[in-house]
Picture 1 (tube, rainbow, N blue to C red):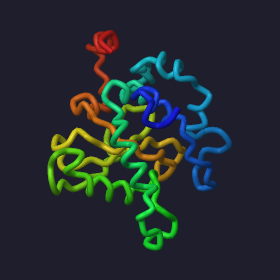
Picture 2 (cartoon, rainbow, N blue to C red):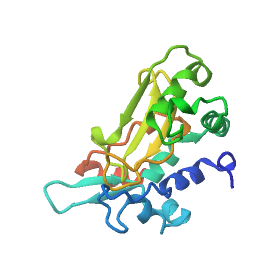
Picture 3 (spheres, rainbow, N blue to C red):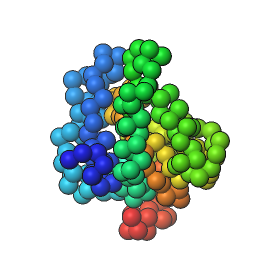
Length: 207
């Protein structure tokens, strides 16, 4: 199945199981990187996992873990046409590879930032929106995996992002190829769920 015939949920599953390698500097041992653990799970396993799990409930510091799969499935729409255009841009013959001996690729942050900036008007209808890179590791986050994404302008200037998922062990590396999605801002940016003892059961029931 090619990239642009997949549904949003299927693409998220593909990203969660995408190998990001086993560099010796990545402290995942033989099989403890996210992609290695995810590859033994089926699409149905992800789909059936709880959206929210309460951990350390019997301690002074209970906290939630939020399913990355469900969070993304509930807040993203995979943009097939835009992703095909991105792949064509990466592979274009007109690209002068002498400017970048390692070549342009879907996992390069600099390349995808450049693409998003160049495509600002096409993707959002707005000219001159600057790219911003956001990594959920740098803020309070309940997700089971770290997200890194490129957005255009301020938070609500654009609902189009280029998303990578951290599939390694060390958060400084091991990110998937970028894919372009449309987001529901109110849901996508809610990646932190603070524990509230009084409302815990209502929260679980409403997910």
